[in-house]
Length: 180
Length: 106
Image (cartoon, rainbow over the protein chains, first blue to last red):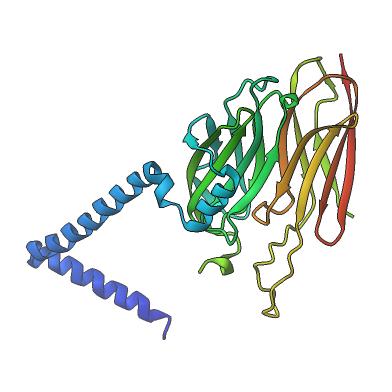
């Protein structure tokens, strides 16, 4: 019996909705217009997020990046995160971080750091590189506890810092217990 | 004990950047998950990975709990001379695994 309840109520509301559509299109229109407004606002927020990265990051993420960068300036560019935009299983998320660098003795990538926004801890990995690496590209598999943004920071031999971020949608989160 | 799997070319041209892939069996328990008894499962992760080519360090990486179970890492390195590449993983609970592959550079 209790199992049938949701079905029944769903059917009822569906009937109700159809009824509204038939009898009072203006009422139904009001509802959809409201939804549409929410959608539009939501879409605007989502599209704005990547451009406001420096301000929109939660404090823990901002602080851990600050620890790496110190007083240096963090600039967007040179770094590329290759990660599927939609992840089914947050327990294993394959990604590669590539930094645009000649990897010569004069100009190379010293370190690549990866951070996340919503896992219990913001740090994911830090890799140390030398000109010997030839190519500044690292692959790894990580865990993501939620739909979130991941941020890569590259430290260059000249002391400059470059960053890139990627938004990842996770359908099954890693360790769901963590999400609060 | 843990099993490590290295994927690296057996031969390479001198000066060529080759890709090396390393995989190791490890649960990478985060320390943030409760077990079936309701208590937190203690953290057990690999914290450090490094690779040496004939003794010279060519790559190192530190891991956080956010690295997936059975950590996989890929990186590039320039082939300079024939020899041995040694890999080392260390972590919690005195975890320590070494693995090596040999490579011929022409």
